[in-house]
Length: 374
Ligand SMILES: Nc1ncnc2c1ncn2[C@@H]1O[C@H](COP(=O)(O)OP(=O)(O)O)[C@@H](O)[C@H]1O
Ligand SMILES: [Mg+2]
Image (cartoon, rainbow, N blue to C red; front, side, top):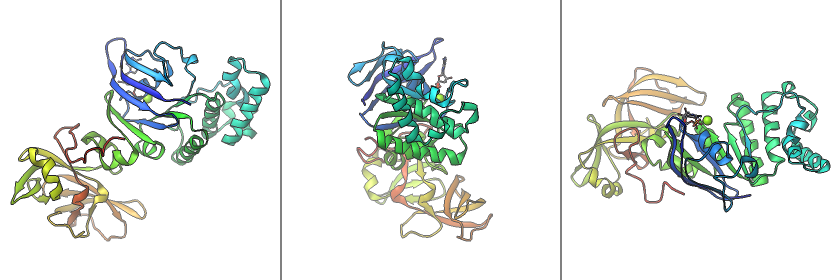
C-alpha cells in the first residue's frame, strides 16, 4: 500500500492539446479517491499517467516516496482495471487471473493459492475453467478485478469499470468494490463520469473539468459546499436550480433580487456578500431545498407555474417556471396533489442556498471558510 502524489502535473498531447492542466492531487495510503467529471475532462489521461501508460509533460508523480515519472508501468507496482475488461478471449478465467503472476515468474503453488483466494473473495470459483465469452458482463468484470487483486499491488486504478453493465448490476458491483476496498485497504484511484458512483464510492471526490481540478473534498463537502457553479450543477439529480439576479442591500438586510422577487438572505451572509452589492450574481438552490409548504422562513417564497410533472414512484419532479422567468425543478412527495398548469408559491430553505459569481465556472461566494476542502 502506498500514497500517490501528483504535483503540478500536466499532459500535453502531441499536436499541442493540453488535456490535463497543472493538477495537484494527494492521495493518502489506503484512501479511495474518485476522479469525476464530464467526458473529455482528462480523467483517463490522469489515470494513465499514474499507471505510466502516458508520459507526464510537466510536474511530478510519486508512488510511495518514489518519483515514478520515468519508471516503466510494469515496475510501478500498480494494477489497472479497464472499462472493456481487456480479458484474453482464448484463455480460461483461471489463466486470465494468473497471467500477470505467471509473467512475473511467480512459483506455480503461489499463483494457485492467490488465484483461488481472489476468486473466493469475488465469488467466481465455479467459473475458473470457463472462457470469457461464456461469462455475463458482471462475471467478466469480476475476473478483471480478480486479475488486479492477485497482484497485491500498492495501488489499484479503475477506469470506468462499471459503465458497460446494466443499471442494477452496476449498483451491485459498486457495493462489491466498496466492500473489497474495506477488506484490502489498497490505495485506489477510481475514474467515473457518474456523479452518483463518485459520491457513493469515494472517501474523497476530485471533480474535474477541461483538464482542471475544480474541487477536491469529501462527498458531502462537494455536495453541500460546491466550490463553483460547475461543481454545484454537476453533482445531484435533478441538478441545482440557478437564478440570475443581483445582490441588494436594503434596510440593513441582504436580498437576492431576480427581477420579480426579492429573496431575503440570512443575515450571517451579509459580510461575505458586502463586496458583491448591486452586482449581477447567480443564486443556486437544490431541488430538495424547495417546497410547496411554507417552512417558517421570511421572504423566501417565489411564484411559479407548473409546466410538467414526472412521477417517479414515491417522489415526483415538478418542472416549473418562476415569475422571474427561470426554469426550476424540485422533487417532492408524489402524493402532494399538484397539477400541471397550476400556479403556486414555492418556499426556499434560505440557509441552504448559494450565491455564485456569474458564468459557468462562477465561484461560490457564500462558502464558510474551510468547508469546501478536506
Ligand atoms: N492520444 C491523444 N491525443 C490527443 N488528444 C487526446 C488523446 N487522448 C485523449 N485526448 C484528448 O484529451 C482530452 C481528455 O481525454 P480523456 O483523458 O480521455 O478524458 P476523459 O477520460 O475524462 O473522458 C479529450 O479532449 C481527448 O480528446
Ligand atoms: Mg475516460
